[in-house]
Image (cartoon, rainbow, N blue to C red; front, side, top):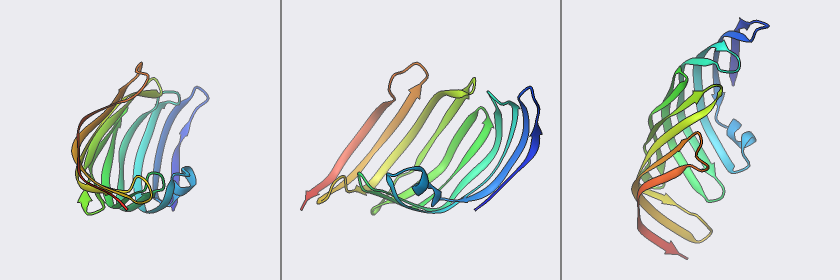
Length: 171
């Protein structure tokens, strides 16, 4: 893990920083008790400027050779990779893809910040023969196209689209 921060800020809260690093995805286990295992890299370079309470970010981060296992429900993401481009107050998720069981799960979307807070987000997920084990003894093969979106003012995010259960088995 490597993290470098260079630049400055002033008493009025203006920032001019460059944040550069390469984090191990194993850090996810520390941040969330739902993550059973995580591996891979997150190299990034981001310039942060403007007011500290509403900063503008420009740069890029990439997930490389990622593996993330969730405990409940049991979901294993392997061969995880993709790029996040920071463009002002937007973060665009491009080319994300992971192996889920014997299938694939490509993902893309964007997050928009406004006045220092989350304003809106939208993510598109395509499941292609994605295998999950929601509980002990249950094995499910999924397919479909889903969109998860939220906008400031909405109480809960909205998930819509089509989810197909190609196979379900209980042992």
